[in-house]
Length: 191
Image 1 (cartoon, rainbow, N blue to C red):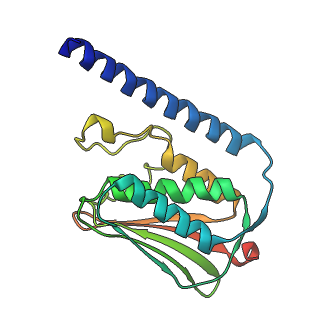
Image 2 (cartoon, rainbow, N blue to C red):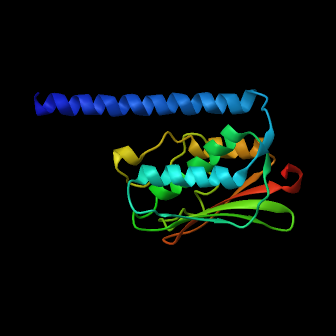
Image 3 (cartoon, one colour):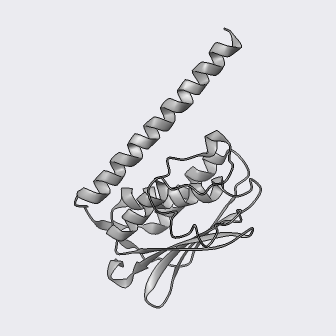
């Protein structure tokens, strides 16, 4: 095979995968906006353990995720939707922070809520960009390798999912130090 042909096929394959991810994400968003959801008591403890194991496996590297479960409260909601939202946030944290840095995932209780914090040691997000990053197709303008770019829909999906669960997404970030994405679930969702 000629190197040019191999390169072209590789490029076509990458583009096809990107289109597939885009279509999947758009369908998921459409469903989140239109479908009634079936709610059960979702066991967050085992869900987070599973997501962290899967995300670590994708890394194929040192285990970069530190998981702290400091609450045994579960959430009334949709398992698949919560899995998708939490996965999105954890994979983003791994993707946009140095490959030797730790990503902290913590599930804990406050007075009126139960909270999932995902904390990375990445480049951070400027204060101007924070309100925009949950909009569809918005991407922070950072020079990244082609394969690191997502569909620009991940955080829109996260925000929609949390809204459907009466929860909030709170983003705090310090430039050059990293970011914290907090999913805040109110008491009425405890089960």
